Amino acid sequence: MLNSRLGISLLSAGVALLAFSSAIAQQPAATPAAAAAAAPAVPLIPPTWAQGRSAEQEAANLSPHPPGLSSLPVAEIPLDKIKLPKGFEISVWASDIPNARSMVFGKNGTLFVGTRFVGSVYAVVEKDGKREVKTIAKGLHRPNGVAFKNGSLYVAELSRIIRYDNIEANLDNPPKPVVVFDALPKDEPHGWKFMTLGPDGWLYFQIGSPGNITMPPVTHAQIVRVDPENAVLETVAAGVRNSVGMAFHPVTKQLWFTNNGRDWVNDDLPNDTLHQVTHKGMNFGFPFCHQGDLIDNEYGKGRSCKEFDPPTFKLGPHVAALGMRFYTGKQFPAEYKNNIFIAEHGSWNRVKKTGFNVSRVVLDGKGKVVKYEPFATGFLQGETFWGRPADVQVMPDGSLLVSDDVAGAIYRIAYKK
Amino acid sequence: MKSFSRNAVGRGLIAFAALALVAAPAASAADAAAGQKKAAACFECHGADGNSLNPIYPSLAAQTPLYIYYQLLQFREQRRVNEQMSPVAAKLTDNDMTDIAAYFSAQKALGAGQPVDEARSGSGKGAAARYHCGSCHMPAFTGQNHIPRIAGLQYDYLVAQLRGFKTGARQDIDGTMASSAQPLSEKDIADIAWYLAGLR
View 1 (spheres, rainbow over the protein chains, first blue to last red):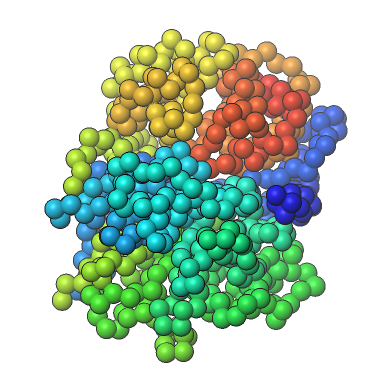
View 2: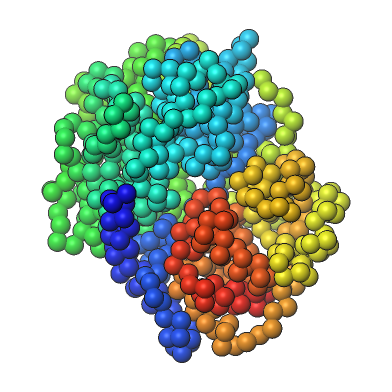
């Protein structure tokens, strides 16, 4: 793909300076003679999560948490640690689902679950009041995004969208997938996708920045949409570092999304953000401006945050705001109607951990945020976490499901009085 | 509800979470003594004390327990394929894996016995710094969490893995090594492996 080639060369140029300067900073270990003998022929790129890290920040010894590849037995999931508002209760809805992340319901009530690290897609079905977990696909490449349309399950892998037709009737013998769209970049960093079906029938997903902080190719740091019938791709919004959660407002039908802010500024900046797309051509500022008002130290030189569209709300630094959904159920009290629930996966790039919650955002009639508060807490105990929320989903009965990609389970939160 | 035949998954995870996140002194649930018995099939290649005597097999002594557990999982689930390891891992439960990991990680690493060539080691040390290997593998290359100790591993093994990451023959869990290995020349690979193999 022409664009992604262009992308790679732009990316290399973009990070070259950064890599070069940090290579010099780290050079004293080598003798001058040895360093000269092994002079690099190509730009040297630090691990993408370490781009933008200063020499002083290395001492903090922070790096991404290990991925969740296994699951906790149901008896060992410490749900008694979870705190909820009065009247709500939480239970294990399904377990033994390693790396459970994005969720979508099929028309007949099957819950489909994507994964980032284990290559599988699961289907959870209700049977006699119990849940059965089936692995309907294995060996896919980061099948994180799932959407459902006209009886078909759409799965977003790292660089392509595939489709399983008439899937709910064939859970025990799934059909071979049909490739819907495969002209997507192959970058691993921020390459896994969150995907959702728009009211227009298009599939919406992100193409993230291929690294922590870098000048992204024109193909990246966007939210895009694909028409699954005609395989046409369009940009929905630009300047988005990496969105791993999006949903359409049930009344306005506008797209809202969460965005993960860059790392290595400091413990309290920048914030992860909540955005709404109100018109075409919006640009939310990455990599020049973060959170609407913080110019980037390096890429922001000579730029102004006034050039860009601001976020709707700041969610807190490093919380890792992932899956978000509007509460459209009827079970919770009336004040929860059309609230946003956000799965906050929790921080790694912060000395004192933050996030590791399900949060609640209350909007007024004009779409302004009037309240932002933790809804389900306790995944983090002191500085140790036992689980990490990755997505939320409203059940047909109005309960809220929460996926946890470390405990490998899905919880159900219900309102009882 | 499904029955939980794979009870060990969770116990292992809790144990490793404790190790990884609060640096607890030992994994409480994983059983190193049981692991020693279960690891008998590993000894011929990896050494009874986890110090390999054959350069194509990596030492496992003092390896991080989460790395050993996750790689065994990858072999069993066929996300890492190797004609010797895949059949061995296919028979292991998660409980077996965490026990085996606990055993090998508690052994003393004796190093690979690599002859020292100061100039070559110096070039490898420089290359390892330029390519930021220590960012994930830690400054002394002793590993952390699911990121392996690479200090004192066998030269032939290290060369084969770096080549494998570069070509895609070896898949890694999150793509970090595939990206990192792309710019490595054959000389870089040889120098870095030489340097690491000479460390303890």
